[in-house]
Image (cartoon, rainbow, N blue to C red; front, side):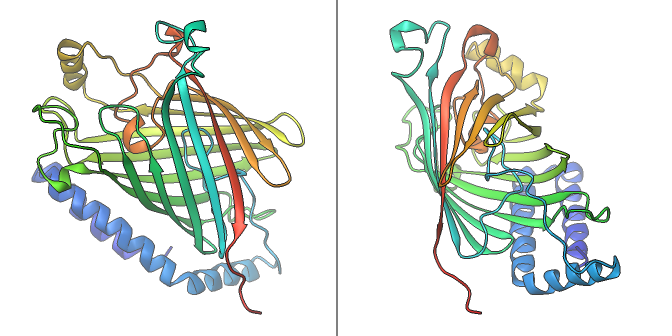
Length: 343
């Protein structure tokens, strides 16, 4: 943590000055995202130093071995990222699929309770370049006006909860991504996909993940900042959301997982969408079951979010649970060994 403190404080001052004083959101976005990437890469480069610092702290507490707590079993719950990383030399191959509405006007028996429809799917790879650093790449279909999405990101573990060590009570990770839409530009103006330049096709997410395991229960907070380079004139380019997740064991190989996000969208934007598009936004809520097998981790999901990427479901979830506008979904995860370190 001492290695990144000067950079964090410096870039925080820049963020506050640009966004709240000068009111220049585009400059703020570039500075904020570049700063976070720089911070993460510097920490990755200093991984050995950080490990030595942790070892020194462990020695000061009088313990020879400190085991990291496995708070979650996979890199995601339903909609939320977790602090879990793949591990150096390993690759997590994961597939997520969301079906159509189970009930409501778009569901029911006519669509086999949503199974005949596909709203979104994502194929992703989490590659462990370090013990605490994952490179993330994925392709998602997309469910709304913006589709054909390519994701490139990273997750870096800044701090780990350790067993029987009160000085390490939490795990903290940083997640960030850049998502590009490669779909054809809409010829009509003032649509979400009316891209006028290549940079308009990008969106970014930066997320701090704070987790703790208490007994057999795992809890997590996901403060998230989402920014889009282009949006229609009455929409918000930048949206902050507070997310959270919980995992409850139901058996040796079965867990109940829940997650939730509350986007802080301004009222004028909500009113404009209600008047112009008859749309109302809702908080994304996910409920699911995690099944652990010898070779795979399988998630059976239920969520009102149609889209899978944070870049999309945080600013645009318009489905309501109480109207039957939630869907089946699943995630399958399998880890492979790419290389082994020489002893």
